[in-house]
Length: 155
Ligand SMILES: Cc1cc2nc3c(=O)[nH]c(=O)nc-3n(C[C@H](O)[C@H](O)[C@H](O)COP(=O)(O)O)c2cc1C
Image (tube, rainbow, N blue to C red):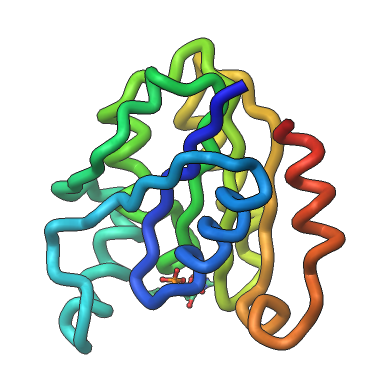
């Protein structure tokens, strides 16, 4: 089995989780880069607006998911919705027939609503699991047992 972890992270939380998952699965890792400026106050406001509107964006990434059996995709939530770089990634790559899992680190447990929206964007893939974690838990608690349970599902 070959694994790719593809992630977007604006402030590093989802990057850290992506790196942990990649290590546990001996997976390749690829950062999805949003070419739209998302830093600063204006970037923050536009990120929320774009996410709420379901907008797409311009992204860059290096690895082709076609080369892998299983793709694990991670990102935060913005304004209660799947974020534009993830919507765009799911539209740009062909994941049909692939095993796909998602992970989200966000401020709240809004990932329970966002996972189904993301799953709806991969109708031709085999969805194999989700790992959601609140930011406070990610920063202050030991979540390794939950992460390991996710890894076992993905394997
Ligand atoms: C514009 C914007 C909107 C956000 N909206 C939400 C939200 O609706 N729900 C939530 O739980 N977190 C929200 N967040 C918080 C991020 O999801 C959270 O800080 C996450 O851990 C950031 O991940 P990152 O460090 O990988 O970028 C928002 C963050 C930004 C920048």
